[in-house]
Image (tube, rainbow, N blue to C red; front, top):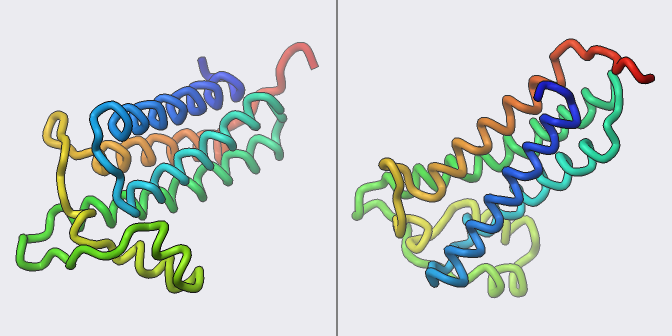
Length: 167
């Protein structure tokens, strides 16, 4: 499946799966997301919407590059957030930041730029590793997924686009 629509449909389904898994962890396993987890979910949602719109639109040439660029941009932001989260989880216990207020409190009581700064700095709850698979935590797997999304976007941004036969 090397067509644009196919690649973007797979990307959308991957993002949807990630959000469903996050919902499972939150509502079934009762693993409350920290502020960095929520930001990562927002970025997965944003990339998923771009994948879905691209799959529905199925553009040629310039349109494919635009969608590819948007995927790379939003997935790179998500990867940076996930990378920060993984870094916080690797800190020695004495260097972990103290626990801070929840995301709702931060957003409601601080200006947007200060709220984003506070969330990106992370807090003690962001350093907790609640689940691992093959040695990677949830943010670790999310980082891997964002890197794959970046590669998918780059394939559309810089790949050679063959005009479909039916156009």
